[in-house]
Length: 154
Image (tube, rainbow, N blue to C red; front, side, top):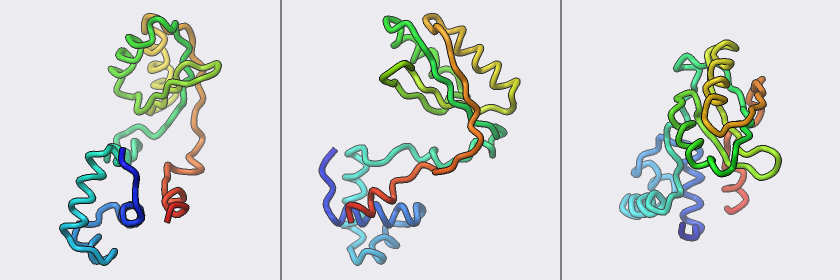
């Protein structure tokens, strides 16, 4: 990823404020030409600056009102295959490899407690998974955000 300059940061701040902005609207807001905005957006996209846009879809709208975090303890030599197996479970919306006591931290969405129990059982059934520890999210208190980091740069 290339290093962001002040104009890139302002462009990202404007997108953070209004993610649906068009190139023309961004150009007007920032006092840039549409071509400049379009070229910078392309460069930002090619550099990997943007995450997948499906992140903004609320799983509750799809019928999955509950979120849980499952700590997964695995046999390290089977980690690569376990990750492939976990990727086949549609309710797993995110997973991170961790340092420390937990090998993987998996974020899942579910319809209810019985569904969470089923998902946990599916994870436990993966060859090489030794055990899990599950915590139900009671509510999101700080949503995913980058605006404070952009503000710090600007």
